[in-house]
Length: 142
Image (cartoon, rainbow, N blue to C red; front, side):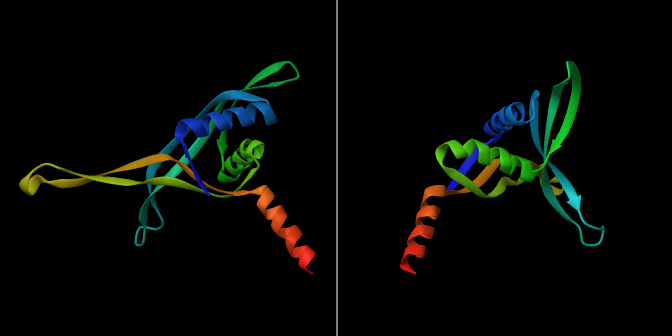
């Protein structure tokens, strides 16, 4: 089953995860920016998703400012901890990203402008109970 999370929902889940697990209170920002990837000869344009938490952590009574990049594996862990309450487990995370193209101008001054977009994450989940039941049934047949 696929679940779609918007940017705002992802930010709330990540902020809650970092507050509970690592004690970091702050704001999560998620952006999708267009980059040229590869060498000059065979490069291509893609949207890279940058996730970052900016906040502070309290260590031994000292409040220390913090800025940390969030990786996709950390996003998977946060979504796993969120979906554990609903007895679901994350299999795969992909991003809903790409380019929109728009024609600007008229006649010989017409050109196509590409703009990057990032709408959120598509999470493929599986039910924990179903998998456990299948294993038990398979073991009973032997």
